[in-house]
Amino acid sequence: MTRSESDFEKLKRRRNWLKRRWWENLMIRHIVKRYYNLLPNNGTYIIDEDWDNLIILDACRYDSFCEVLGQSVDYRISRGSNTVSFLRENFGNGRFKDIVYFTANPHVNLICKGKFHKIIPLWDFGWDTELNTVLPKTVYDTVLSKITDYQDKRVIVHFIQPHYPYLRDPDLILFGRRYNKYGMQAAIDISKRKDIQNPTLIREMKRYHISFNKHEIKKVYAAYVRNLELVLPYAIKLAKLLDGKSVITSDHGNAFNEYAIPFPVRIMDHPEGIFIKELVKVPWMVID
Image (cartoon, rainbow, N blue to C red; front, side, top):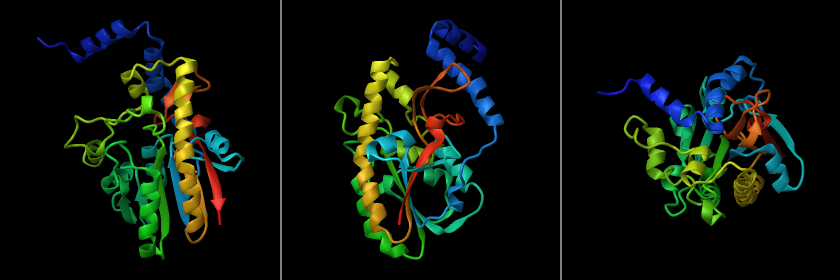
């Protein structure tokens, strides 16, 4: 005899009812997201902004960007708190045949198929099997080698860093190990590979028994900053080499246990539909 779904839910509650993080996640799903969904989305439509080349650093917070750069820059409010919502909000309606999109993030292929003149999937042919990601140098080299084919187009370049895996931290390098090339293919054809799930920071912290205390979160944030230090020089160098007006920005930010004001719950990673400033305030650095 099998338990009904409600029986499983009751069992789950009995096992977790003393765990603060479990109650917070429940509140985030059923209350916090609904609250933010009722608020107007005042984010920027990036397609309406003035740029020839848009360089996107995945999951890059505004404050972290300024910290690594060593100076303040302009900012925008993203229309999404994760990549999927960012893509749907900005490119869900219409076609953009004047744009070529170089991407190390597979969600672009999944969400925006047929939207652009061409999507060049760096994650498909530029995958580093040892580090389980697409390295910044691979993105940089590929764009420079192919850009002359699209001189009459606007260009979007989507780096995957500072998003994990954290490349300069050996004890955290396994973050995202399930996010391998097969996982990337699953993002494109999810119906064929439902057994593979893309990791989130919370899942990965649990998987490697990293707690949510201040010391451990500070350690993970430091690794995140080092990822940003790795990618930012490539982004700036690329922006200066491309013809026209270049902008370095991000699709969304990343939370490291900040409160989802006005609620007494903390947010990790970049869940969809949570519009706190750590997730939607992104850099907007213009390089002519």
